Length: 376
Picture (tube, rainbow, N blue to C red):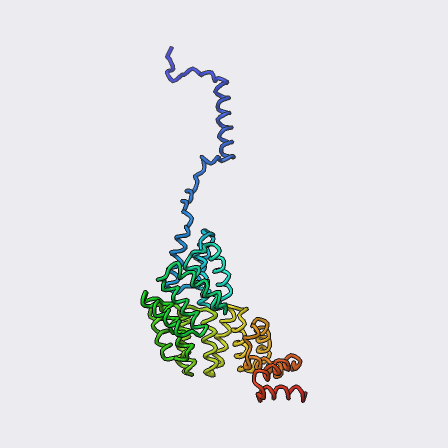
């Protein structure tokens, strides 16, 4: 009989192999459903970055100030102050920026805190003295300035602050001595050069003031406040074209409400009422609670015969300005705006016109407004 060599005996399947196959299958199903992390490709973890230090924000602030980016500088200094709450440096630097923008009360709050934190910090004492001088607290200002001078007798900034204080109290000889001493120590000291221009301005020597403010600008060309002070000298000389050009430069360097207000008011004085209105609107957008800006904006509305907006804007300004900040021009236009608008509001306009006559007795335009209301 021939043998079939293709024949193979059937192997007996073991039950254990079947069970193991089922277990493997169940495990595979479980893994597919659960999808553990080690089976799923994970995105790379983000690299951790170190938190910027206070020194980092100080460096950023100084770079922004040098470039004229004062908004960014303020933000960097505020961040630094958060990281170093016991340091006077960011508070002093911030108060300097606020003074440049004529935000005196904000600067005052910061220098008060700075002096509390570091009672022997010369920069804090000097800046606090300067802020107090701007607020009219001359005795306290000189006290803090002399405290700083005792700590550092050769500090040019402290001497410059004393020169400013002496200028404000009318001691021009003493002011000049301090400022000349400051410039002898540091000929490139911007504050001393600026304050020397201020001294000449107070003495109505506007030509010499222009020279000193121009020198200060050469030392710090990205300071908008210096251009504004230079422009103010041209206003004193009725050179409105030069004033406008100088204020435009201030706005180009740093668009602040202070710079825009100066430009808008110079345009108003030069009878460019339409452009004045545009500029002053922008200033009011930046600082909607600035009484002086709103007063100038109201006057610009009045010149454009928009008496309704003039009355509304100037009433808002009146609520924000101090009593000693009012003058005949302001009260006159406020009163006439109420009288000339439709419908008339004589009950609101007459008190302002009467106040105008207290400033300028017999002023014909105020008398005209009163007659308009009495005849109606």
